[in-house]
Length: 376
Image (cartoon, rainbow, N blue to C red; front, side, top):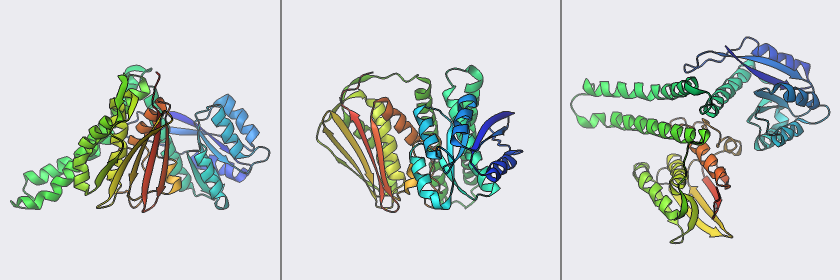
């Protein structure tokens, strides 16, 4: 059994006791975990009391109300950010304060729960956060805790691959048994679904390997000055068949040469993920534009798509490990939830910046800026 500390910060005794009661016998369990996770709930009625507890006990999860006596929840959040405290913060707030909750999410809160909330809503949120905490802890420990952590890491990978492998096995069985007769065209849809599963597994494996290299410091950089267009066209070579399949056109708008210092393969990984998302979440006969420019010793890469877009609050979670935006438009789109996390980590490692603009049904724009001369 493993225990996570959950600190609930609210000046309403009923909210604090309610959270304690709901989580008292609640357990989170996943097939890839050796043991279930339980929760030890700590309580604070003010921001000041919360900061004292956080300093002494470092809870993994904080449920934070904004309207508090003394310093406000948003001030507590700012203090945690300044002190680089790694607790995952979830704002609990009334419906009238949703705008504030969205702002808090932008300032570093992982999510928010509107109140009054039901026991199921709280448990569902805590379950999602617990998986995030577990996977983050496991990834960061890969290089320090030896064989057992590596075994758990492989267990996660095997668990995530189990579903598509089962599906592929079922499709092959249908083919072997000629379930739809001997007309090959009757099996086109099955073959298409099989290929989709295979591509999803390949993406997951490559993303996990990329993430592991970065988290454990094993990635070796071949830093040199190169033409960024080389990475663009390398990514396009890999993505073009997918674009044709999705009926999405890709356009490159750039001078003939833009030089930058860095590892060309890492920039190809960045572009692979951005272009892949631009295709994956696009509409039929959609378009992806890759715009490159340079100014004041900075190189700007912009990937613009005409896809399904996102709500503002959805974009706040995009760069977290194992996070995928789930809604009616994305429910049939597969992915590892790691691609944009890898993009963000690589961008940060080059002292670069990344911004996103998105609007539902209009598309998304990812804008990345890098210094031309990277120093290790």
